[in-house]
Length: 225
Image (tube, rainbow, N blue to C red; front, side):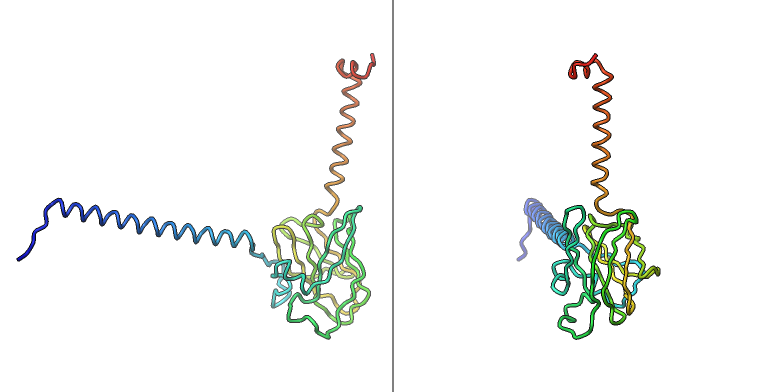
């Protein structure tokens, strides 16, 4: 004996089916939103590196690492510019696997900013053989439009690899045996902002003097006629 469903029962089943479908769609959208938010958070916390320039090296181990990771195998030079200290991390491979290697490395002597040439100058005491050298440069020390630096080793135009991050860049080159001087030229260097502030303050002071001498209100404050 077959039972017959009333129209009311059919309508209830249709409503229930639509409701279940809406629930599944809502849950699916929520899962997609959570996944998208997770991916976005990862990208914000660990921003992707942009390796460009001329691809001097087959491997970008020296340039793709996060700063806290690269510090493990890096050396640090504290550079002072107008009384402000900047930590400049550098190394000769960037790979943690190379730590403890007996391979001779260059002996870095100094780093300094050439404000006139908008460049970072690096000198070596000794370069025993052709060597990979990289340096991580904070953007507030030196920067270049679209990462287009110019690099010279002992006056010779030199190819380089570059990794761009939000607040710094890592630049790698090959320093030839007995090389002595490396110059990395950008478009702005520290402390250009300080010079701009001085110029602004100077213009403000001149404006104040002019106001005091020329306006009646200024004369009332200064007591001049």
